[in-house]
Image 1: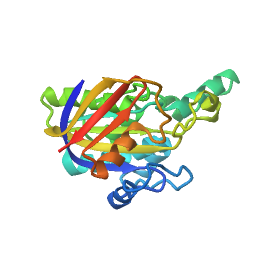
Image 2: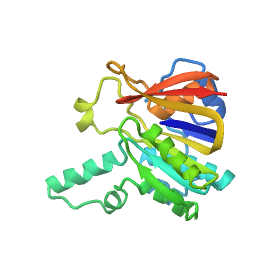
Image 3: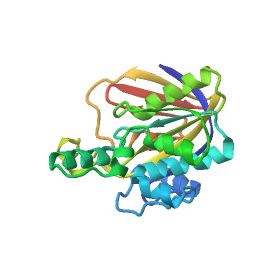
Image 4: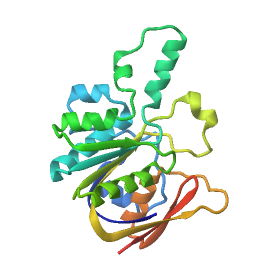
Length: 241
């Protein structure tokens, strides 16, 4: 798979990080996030909407709204490896114990809840999609965004995010798996400043300390001309002009 595009604008949020200056300083140090740091505020979200969204979804919608209002994209792609896993576990627990289901959990448990909230709050009836592709969700989201660009949409908003992983699933997680809410939003256009080629991954992958989109952001903001992002089966080799 070959990807070529431009990034017109970006915004991101994670524990202890929110502004462009925060992220640029972070890109010059070791690639890590302190999960215990406070989450940023979400100034673009109405209070009632913020209350209904999970932590990662709040960050995703808030960052998406910021770029939506600055640039009016024509299509939007949301990616998330785990989606609303916390809500779904609460629903399953309630069913197992024969307790009433939370109406909010039921309504907001679907994978496209976050992107739906973005289009509703932003009053923007955009072409939208929400996908999950395991550890490669961000990279596959770029492929989806490229398809939309090739189809004629000039500005495509890509938002990658995730939430806390419930304790029930921790024994199944690989050592070092990131476990905190975050969101990365990129406004993408056709272009040649960024190129990416996928290759089969050889050997056993090393533990990842950051989700894919934050690994990309760390390397891109630090000014690296070439870098790689590994997934479950592929290595994504990036070059920047």
